[in-house]
Amino acid sequence: MGGTAEFRDTLVQLVRARHPVLLVETHEEERVLSTVRSLAMDPTALPRPRNVLVYTLSNGLHVCGGEGKPMQPAAALTAARKTDQPTIFVFCDLHHFLGSQSRGPDPELIRALIDTANAFKSGAVPHTLVLVAPGLTLPLDLEKIITMVDLPLPDIDEVADVLDSIVTANAANISIRLTDEERHRLLQAALGLTRWEAENAFARAISSDRVLDADDIALVLDEKRQTIRKSGLLEFIPPSGSLDDIGGLEVLKQWLRKRNGSWLADAAEWSIPAPKGILITGVPGCGKSLTAKCMSTLWGLPLLRLDIGRVFSGLVGSSEQNMRGALRLAEAVSPSILWIDEIEKGFGSSASGGDSGTGQRVFGTFLTWMQEKSKPVFVVATANRIESLPAEFLRKGRFDEIFFVDLPTETERIPIWRLHIGKRIKQHGAGPVVQPTDHVAALLAAASEGFSGAEIEQAVISASFDAFADRRNVALDDLQRAIANTVPLSTTQAEKIAEIREWAATRAVAATAPDDRAAYASTAPQDSADVETWRGGRTFEF
View 1: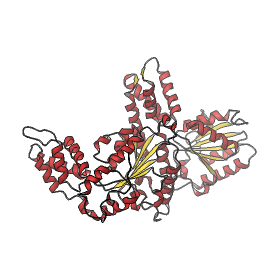
View 2: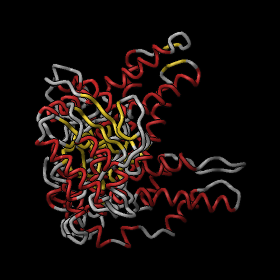
View 3: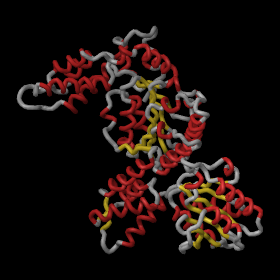
View 4: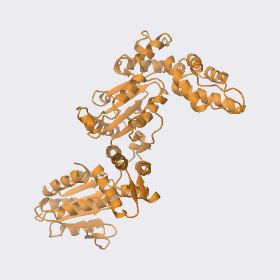
């Protein structure tokens, strides 16, 4: 059970228990009204039937579906207290008076809400006040008298109802060419949208060519991308590349391949829980973020990037609300991948206390969600300086595993050079051009000791600029010159890299295969007394 059905059951319990004031944070006013109207006249839900009155700034207090006269919220609440028939009052638009940044909450309205709560709680006539707002930070006066109620975004069954209603209404003018699997993928693509947005997405898909087929999945995903972007907290990252585009990191890639599909129904038959997530740490520029992007392609799941910096804002309490909203959206889109890049920059100072505790509260909200989430949202967090993260973030149960990504070995650098040469260097006019052969890649891999994957890519780009300036093909000499002119991070930040390696030696799983590490041992930089330790102490055997 989920979506509207879960919300309805919660609403019935609270109304019967005579909770006087409820708050539903949602953009879907119509969905709330529809649910309230259905339970108000349902004798199996409420022993005594209820009337339903709605308040909006434009229509005042009026019968649902009717019209009224504009009136101020405090006056509408006074009228509600005088009603002598059992009623559920649905008030919209009050967030404009309770969360104004310019003039603060309206004290008259706050007092009217307190008086209404007291009257409804002890009155002889059972009334309930339901506040509907897209977002609301409650004033301290109201925190203890208002009950929060969650309205989840539509689940897959409700999205299917939306699709079926559109198809039925347009059956004479459209053609349906969907297999059962394609229909399921289309419905999954719409998860995370409101009913309104889902209707718009399906209508756009149908109106484009009067055919509903597998090609329309991309259109629905595009609508979802716009919706997620409008939230301001999450960014929808389109699938790009595959794990084959990443040189080395075989242990990490094999771990991800083994867990592909573990959120599906047949995995439950094996008593396999959906994986929680991984934390990838290591040297900058060695493929941590690229791995997160390629996971979306491998698993066929939407990739959502959470910008921690956008979560924090100036209004007291809104940062926690932003985090809860972002996590709810990620769950609504599930199964999904939630990517948090450079997580130490957002949570590394959460325990400092320099922000009046906001960072601690946001961090606590995220930790609790990671521990207790029931929806298949796989968290991929990347960090360059993992030692700055709080200890409670790293304990077992938060992440399935912590992987350490080091500078690529010589064996790993060979496919990285082949990849970037083949990707960027093309034939332009007459004359020889360097080719991504094994021989060329091996020569460059040997010459680029201590280079990260990002530095190898930049070397190829630099060589391409040199050739472009002379309007000629890129030669091997251009690449060798770019290597000679590059001072890698392993030289400029040798001490910091040594610290990262020392931390990871006994606390993380090495992402590089044991054979690759052994091949690299003879040429490893001697910045540690124990050469075997710096590559990461623990390994997986597959």
